[in-house]
Amino acid sequence: MKVAALAGGVGGARLAAGLEDSLQIGGGELSVVVNTADDFDLWGLRICPDLDTVMYTLAGLENPDTGWGLAGETFATLEMLASYGEDPWFLLGDRDLATHLLRAERLWGGAALTEVTADLARRLGLRSQLLPMSDEPVGTVIHTPEGPLEFQEYFVRRGQRDAVLAVEFRGIGEARPTAAVREAVSGAEAVVLCPSNPLVSLGPILALPGMRELLSEASAPKVAVSPIVGGRALKGPADRMLYSLGHEVSATGVARIYGGLVDGMVIDRADRDERPAIEDLGMEVLATDAVMHGPPDRARLAEEVLGFAATLGRAEGGRG
Ligand code: FO1
Image (cartoon, protein in one colour):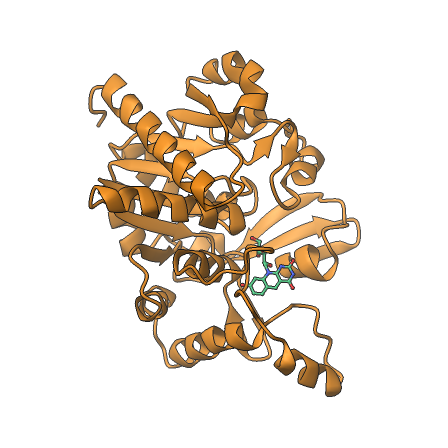
């Protein structure tokens, strides 16, 4: 079975790892399309946090406590940068820096992000395809009462404390899904929208010109997993962002954002009362344990998501 997963950072990476494990049993193939609108430049390096989070997780190298960065990381380089008077606000570990050095060398030499990412992923032994959503740069800007903030400035440096007035994806009009993304989505037998922030993680992927059409034209059943459980985000500021931007902070609120795009929503049992509201949006609902506490949960949830997608494919009688 060929599966395309759309993912942002930690939540997306964890479900992608579960999908990879469950697909391995039947010889399936996974392509993970990853948000690149959190990417930014620091000390001459191109940092791609979501790509790296997914890459390290699929390679089994991730820091299990944070979900991002590498396990057993050290920060001697940052300490030296601090000795030079630099502000070490973004925790780039010594080993993580190797990724940024190799990426920067290839990018500054003219290679496309897709090519560089495939090379890094191959060298770390990834079994799945790791696909940046686009090769053109897109930058999320968070508009706040303090003014516009670059995404990592809002997220890491200022600890997500600012009210969010609007979200802008700079450069999105000129960006396009890559050929590899188009192929992965149109050739998939199931498309999974991972439990990532619907506004700033999957939002940029879905905002790429042509992406929604690509998804609607794909014959595969499309299933989204809610990152909101019991009115709270599983990780990060998604709940506060949804609220600030006038969305309902619930699985139903997430389903409304994906309305017309997905055939099924996977929600947590805690939110099972929302089933009728989500079904009213024209989606099937699977209520299960949607919180991933560790690797066994990832594989179990992935199995359930793929099983659910298969029933949708059958119910629709091979949609085209
Ligand atoms: N997140 C933080 O909250 N603080 C950090 O210092 C930080 C450093 C970092 C370094 C490399 C990397 O790949 C990710 C890192 N992240 C950090 C995570 C990242 O900022 C966010 O998880 C995503 O951008 C949101 O999806």
